[in-house]
Image 1 (cartoon, rainbow, N blue to C red):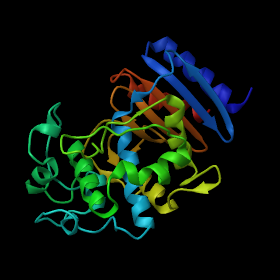
Image 2: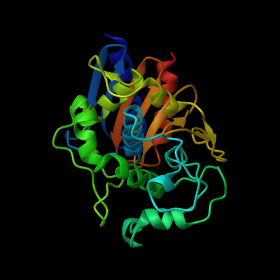
Image 3: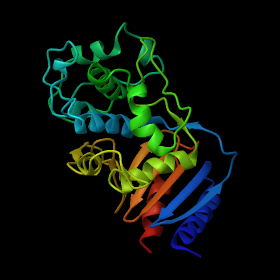
Image 4: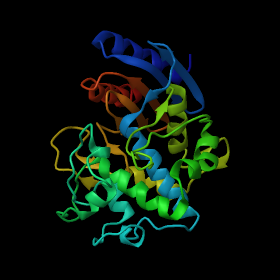
Length: 282
């Protein structure tokens, strides 16, 4: 039995005991891997975990000298604001545009609508429109985001035949809209755990990955695991950081362990993330 086996078995027992509606589990500790499935292995929407992919898109473009994360987006899109790509990707633009099922079609141009709204200053304001606008801006430098990422990110991760859902204007959604199998999502976790390297190939600079769980922004939330946010990463609960998508899509980092969960259980996901940290620390 490896450490990955032990962690998997403990998490499976915990999921089964609590009734959490998990679909798949992938555990990597060091070089050891262990997996478990509760449902058939199919691609599923990863929801807000896609925000990490958007951050990597911006990071790769920055590595190539095509953009700076601290560059005002008005240099890429019509806007009268000093909001930067970093502000948009870290949800610190201070611009409020609540999520709705029709968000992508409620306005002729969602990015223009978002950037036209007033900002409360450099404070946390979570919105899928923020990531969408960041990708709309980035596309002005790199072209179509999906096509730009195919050789640079999707291929190294082994994500073949992958498409990113789009808005009526043909732009990738940015903050959602990607479907992956559990093991495919785990490849993203491995890339981040190893600070931008996978299979011996550097995909993105260490600094971009580090910024996904540092330089935290105070969210003002009292909830454990929701008090601090960075470039797509949440701090906690406890001594971990995580990517967290709706309905229980989790990539949890606990020292040399990375645990990937796919599920359809929004309410139970926080406890699972906490369990990962607690069990990994044992």
